[in-house]
Image 1 (cartoon, rainbow, N blue to C red):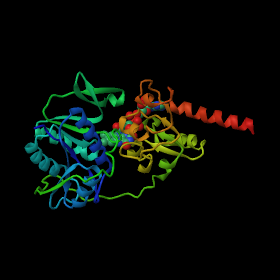
Image 2: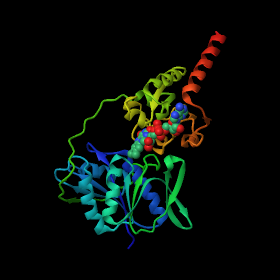
Image 3: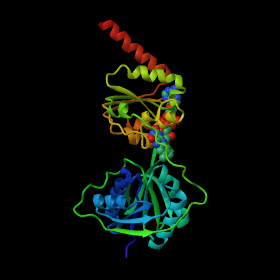
Length: 330
Ligand SMILES: Cc1cc2nc3c(=O)[nH]c(=O)nc-3n(C[C@H](O)[C@H](O)[C@H](O)COP(=O)(O)OP(=O)(O)OC[C@H]3O[C@@H](n4cnc5c(N)ncnc54)[C@H](O)[C@@H]3O)c2cc1C
């Protein structure tokens, strides 16, 4: 009998996260490539019946709901305990988790416990010499590597935005099986989730986004970014995660897998290297201009216009030239 493909669902507050459907889409693509294997989606948590039902209804795939009393939210220790137990019995060929904060937290440790290979940040499935390889970015996105393993079990983390979600509302819901398992964390405990109220509408609705990366050098240079953005109607300022982590911009401005997904007509990336986690959030942009002093920056691979300059000298000249032209035409 062929080994199953397992998907680990992500959910929060009684709802599946969108990445769960992308993982199901990935698993179906893999299933076709392997011409075998059933797919089972595992849902872990305390109150998960409705999450399991929703996933089964929307994907038509088998769902295995593992109720863990006392597990109100995500906990890496519990996930690793439960999954290593179940998957040791099942011996799946592939275990698919999200390349998210959660997936990256538990997947490598789980792979060690299962004696499985672990390939993270998968963006595509490619076949080479009849072998299935998983494509992932290396060197900050400058190089793509097609990784192959002959390990009988592989843990994969899938980059959000790389695979189309499984089509919603299939003809019949998949079967849902339930099981109760006990596992209490010994080392790490959640102290709850504090949700920050953010208004992300400025970036998601803007027609032009000027985005700042670490290359702006210091918070004061954000002034240049705001001045550049102000030249365009319906514009907004976005940022890379590093810029938000440093507190230079609020997280409502963050573009990328753990920030907003945007698709403006024009995206101007200033001092952004083009890490895949950033690019996944802006690759739907109509026209991309990048300013970076490194001619090999990965952002240039997804740009229509590449400006190899120091932004602190280039942007003031650009703004000044524009203002002079406006003054002449008045
Ligand atoms: C699970 C996970 C989720 C993540 N989610 C996100 C996300 O949602 N969004 C996101 O953005 N990142 C995310 N990241 C982080 C991501 O991997 C990168 O670290 C980040 O995007 C890099 O930000 P950056 O491009 O601003 O900085 P850097 O990578 O440091 O790049 C700075 C760039 O500026 C250029 N530069 C420097 N000085 C100048 C100058 N004077 N003029 C012009 N160019 C200059 C440099 O050549 C360089 O290319 C995530 C990472 C992980 C692991």
